[in-house]
Length: 122
Image 1 (tube, one colour):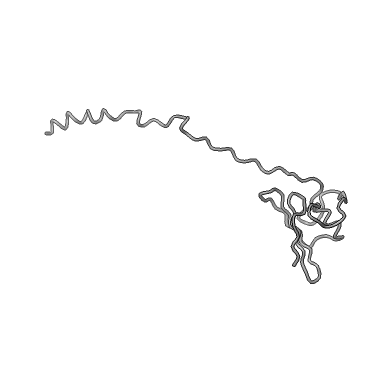
Image 2 (tube, rainbow, N blue to C red):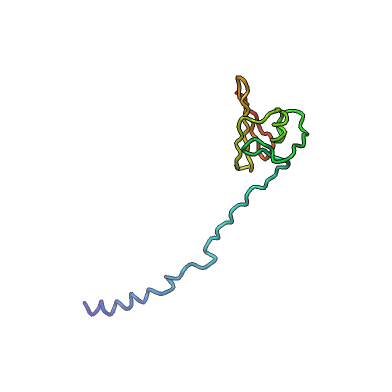
């Protein structure tokens, strides 16, 4: 019986080939997709800094506080600097929150890419 196993062992080992240990073909490896590019800055004109000051001269084209006006137009129309400004980057690009603490109420202006998106008054 031992002699039979000794004769069978080389036959069993012959089934193991180096092909079983080779890596997959390059076409079988999925490529890693490239990282999406950062959203383009699709805004124009001066913008507010974290200190509430404009980064350049205000064109002064807006006549009223309404959706679509620029950050610096809001400050010009309000006639005074904001109480607080929060500048950040979001999914849509540049996002800015401008707070004006009014007597008895607060006004929060939300800008996306230097355009007034919405106003929350409390």
